[in-house]
Length: 416
Ligand SMILES: Cc1ncc(COP(=O)(O)O)c(C=O)c1O
Image 1: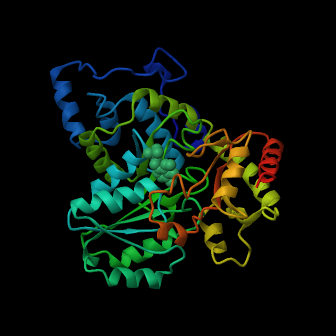
Image 2: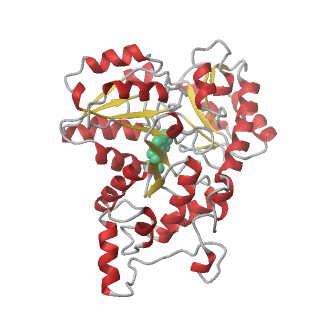
Image 3: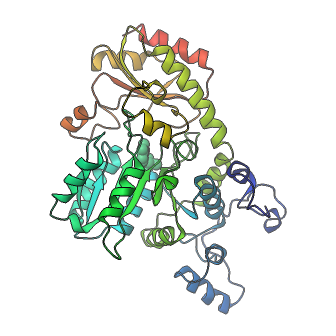
């Protein structure tokens, strides 16, 4: 696609990042299933290695194809599309969401550093930071959902490593109860904390809402992170991750990615380029269905508590933040059935259309039990503190007809 500067991200996501004339005029990108690329001359090979080491422009680096652990055309197409959707200068794709998250943290945090966290975090991220990163002498400090600037400031000020704060890692809305964190408030705080010449990076896991309903970079974040397994992939048929942001940061993340060997494979990147063509349509429709379901079931006699961002009352403390940071309530919801684990399991075992499975963001509706599944490796105390109770069900709403989903949930609730 030529002259792409003035087209919208949605149009760019359809055909951008691929020139048919580079591939026998094939409208869709071919899958470059190769481990290595031939240099036209030894001089070209030398120049490509210099570019891979960080010299030259982003376009020159993208064009220096050397070896599929460093770079390949299918990753580049996917990265150009995601960067445009996120309003970022560049993006990097990985073999999983956890690869994107761990690779990014390892790029910016080193022995002796401190990481500030929102809570709760996705179980895998929580375990990576609290159980593995500590072995490399990176300490963490977390603030509670809803903490204000003063409370966070005090928390950091009292930590012995306050001068070694290197990264603020946020997940908003947080999985599974959708608590919100104000990204621009953290941006303001880090400007106050930042020492001359020392950058404090803000990274946001945007898996639940991005790239359509939340743009963290426009609220002051530096790095936008994804489990691309979810909405970006959108069909429960791949595992991938992504990071997007300014070129200077993504360049560092990509060099670490080369060393850790966590670049996405050509086929998975090809699937993602295909999926990003429809991500806005899928997310809009899934969010519309979720909003209908939330409004229908919020007062159901078998449900004691319902979480969906469209249900936030006007006077709720998060309402202003919701309006500032999001353009939709999204397609993730959670609710507590009356009772406990036995009642929740009865609901889950009775579902006929929705599938009983973890993961999210796919065309099919998925329902799960965070307390014993995706959040089971969190300490009991942390689960309960974050409202992850034995009665809680999490639902990722898919593209089925909303009437079928209403019927399915009604009959499953009748079993509770
Ligand atoms: C919010 C969030 N972040 C990160 C991940 C990890 O992604 P992946 O499973 O692709 O490694 C997940 C997975 O469920 C997730 O829900």
